[in-house]
Amino acid sequence: MTALIQTIIMALDIYWWLIIGSAIFSWLYAFNVVNPNNQFVGTIGNFLYKVTEPALRPIRNVMPDLGGIDISPIILLLLLFFVRQFIITTVAPAIL
Image (tube, rainbow, N blue to C red; front, side, top):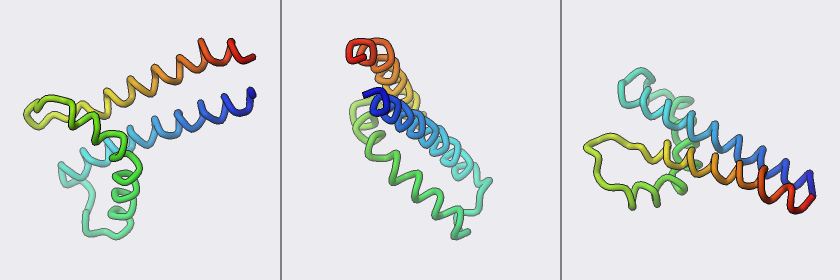
């Protein structure tokens, strides 16, 4: 059971970094730092979008319009942190 909990925690950690990478990539794309016509850059951007957008879209639908500021990645990171801490502090001690 410990291996399962550690695997879930690792998956949450990987997704955490994918969300941060997606946010940074979107800033680089918005400020025209990266070349969107480059195939490698487009592939990375497409991957990050497809991985993070299903989790970010419901948050964006609920959030009010903040005038171009997207805080949905921050909310998702807070939610992932809560789930991670809940598993570590509550679920894992109860199971083990």
